[in-house]
Image 1 (cartoon, rainbow, N blue to C red):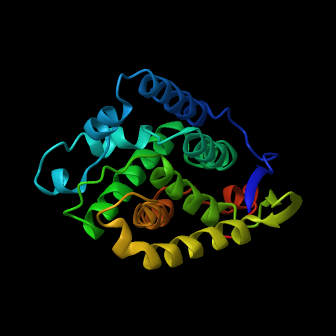
Image 2: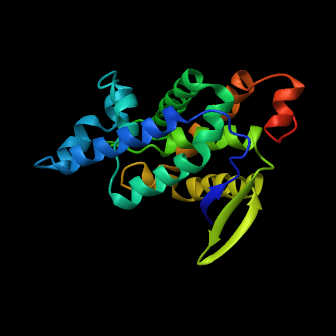
Length: 221
């Protein structure tokens, strides 16, 4: 189920931060491609659980969320950020949204470290932070219609269906692949779940209050 669009009719502000984050991710990816050995670049700037557990390379908790393993990894993440990030940014405001995004990304990395503290495999990607954005969208815009592709067939579903199916799959795949991903490459489902849970908690703190604002965003408080 691939999202291809949503309802932005209630959005009031231009999503400077969302588009800026997409631009930064693209620039960093091109820098990564220009490296003599991209794998070394990823090893240096990706978050390696064993290093962070030992108190080293703490800056990678931040830098890792702007690295990607390939075009599919990058474009998939940016698609989700482009579709869901703008409404969340509009609800939070630009500054709160940026802090929210970064904190969710760091929380996602820490979740993966907690699950596999001795792993020497670097984790990279914006998906942990974007998982937090999905959580915020789920809370504030869960009834919003989202256009998706089921294979090649387009459909429209409520956001709570699309995001609900996604997070359930993250829990299931994460449990199934836990033993494998501790010491080998793969999708860091633990980071997705951690970012989503962090996003849920932060959304209840940061979301707009007041009956008028809640009605505007189309989801009951």
